[in-house]
Image (cartoon, rainbow, N blue to C red; front, side):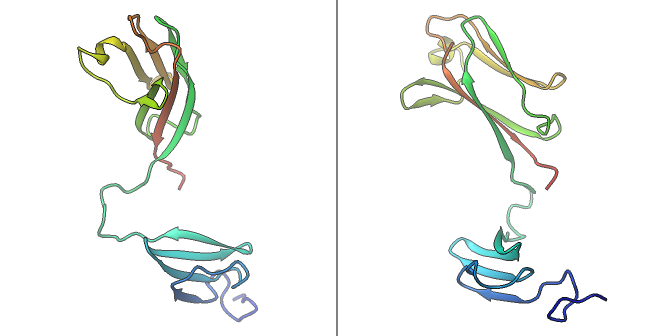
Amino acid sequence: MSTTRRGLQKGKATRTKAGVASPLNSTGIDGDIRVVETAKGPKLKVRSNGKWWTADLVDETQNQTAGFVPKVWVDRGITPGMGATSFVYPPDYVTNNTIVAISFGVSLGTNERTYFSLGDSGAALIYDMFVHYNKKLKYVKIEIKGSADSVDLKDYTLAVFYEDRKS
């Protein structure tokens, strides 16, 4: 068996410590592991390549159904003109099998962004637009229909939430 300079097996942590303060970059050696208590709960600290890395520790009895925290890909742009359609293509790593949700918001004025409107009266009738995801061609389609007070040519934010299966 090969050993490190301290006589421990390679690949094993050189030491484990528990504490209430985060370690300084000037302390420890690569391979050190520490558990640190914070106001938000315990954190795991690992020293690698000359610096400390952090991971949250999760209570196994909480939120068993989620299983993952989604990542988000964001696109910002201008909605198409009235009666027109535009297409947004997420990157290849966002796939049909990993998309969890899509959020679309249009800036209707200073300090306002509308993320959802549904109905057949009031603003929902006036702002006649659709946001679709085409699973076969893998794009988000933004359609602006004609109306008296449209959302055409407005700033938008498109957020595609997805599960990162590489982690």
